[in-house]
Image (cartoon, rainbow, N blue to C red; front, side):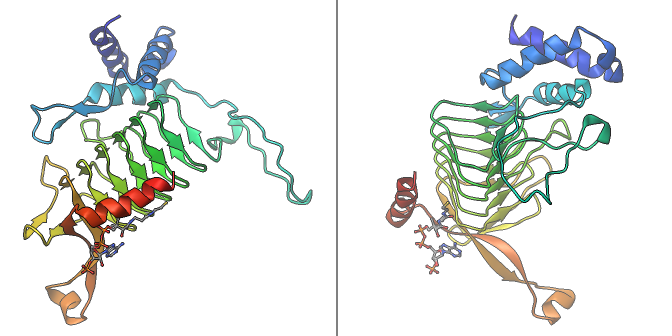
Length: 281
Ligand SMILES: CC(C)(COP(=O)(O)OP(=O)(O)OC[C@H]1O[C@@H](n2cnc3c(N)ncnc32)[C@H](O)[C@@H]1OP(=O)(O)O)[C@@H](O)C(=O)NCCC(=O)NCCS
């Protein structure tokens, strides 16, 4: 079956709404779709030189993932491990009837995620469905790769870094982190932000659609626009900073707001700093 055919069938079952739930032919199509995701054959977004951002969102892939949620029902999940603790405080047990979803594992990779060979996952970490993670990437402890996020080759997602997911709105671009990016500890990348090749996010940098980024090298302020997400340029070194509030009470009170700052573009010192990070592997 070609991807086109799979795409058509996914779109049809998605368009069918709740009636797909009772259709026995829907689940095998979803499972075929999920396997293709896990092999990396289809992606929620993919490089496209024709697109203004360099990436094309495949809305039908997100529809397929949402179809999976629609078709799914709650079942017991996960393997039990031999933990030991005081008998007075045993673990609470839940069943599907409780209508509480507890997703298993200190580290988990959810079905429908693609991980290339040589990806390293340090516990605990979590990769959600539809995520695409390319060769040689390191996902460190407490890192999260949200649904449909696209992570390039040799990316270092440091401890506790959070890459937001996006399933809806269906056309929304997922977070994209291109090849050789260093995402420092405790960073957060959300709302379709694109981080271009070899950029470096210093520990604690947070990027969202609403966060202006001050580039003191070029003298420009980078922002998301209507159809364009926040885009961090290639080789940018971004650190968490602050800027004075310039109006109203905020100014009167001398407040400042968090803002990421591009302090420079990669230089020899950055190569040294990031090479040291690589040694941690
Ligand atoms: C960004 C980083 C890689 C340093 O890169 P670098 O090219 O060596 O940067 P430099 O040290 O030359 O710093 C450039 C400027 O940014 C500032 N800066 C660097 N890191 C900063 C940070 N985290 N927060 C605020 N400012 C920072 C420096 O003070 C310097 O400004 P100055 O010239 O006005 O003093 C490093 O700071 C970093 O955050 N590494 C990630 C560490 C990490 O998260 N490890 C996770 C292990 S799991």
